[in-house]
Length: 173
Image (tube, rainbow, N blue to C red; front, side, top):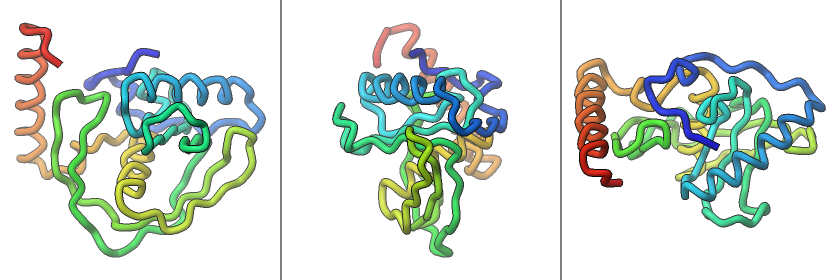
């Protein structure tokens, strides 16, 4: 699957809920998990592969083992800690750029798994909590750079354009 890059408008739109039992979303979850492994990413949301559906895949182990992969349909936060901490983030849809933003230290998420069974992830912390917030933001049309202040966001976008231009000129990754 191709990773959609900023500023593609699909990244800026709120995604639609998945209809329970929609088998096409199960295939999509598998394809997204395979793509995530190939690009060695930690998380991938459906709009990043051109699909405006509330689907997320997270794999913190970066292995192909399905037991390490969270496949989430219609995820939603049920709780967020009051404590905010710094998170250095990047995004497959905004390559080459990393920025420090504030995220909730801990979150709880309710979702359906690939068998459409209700699951709850209680009080996730650390990198998992940051990934959940990052990927669920994608489902609401929000990018991590949108969490920067206006001036920092403008600077980050200038930097991103320069990094993209350098990559196109040199083929550097």
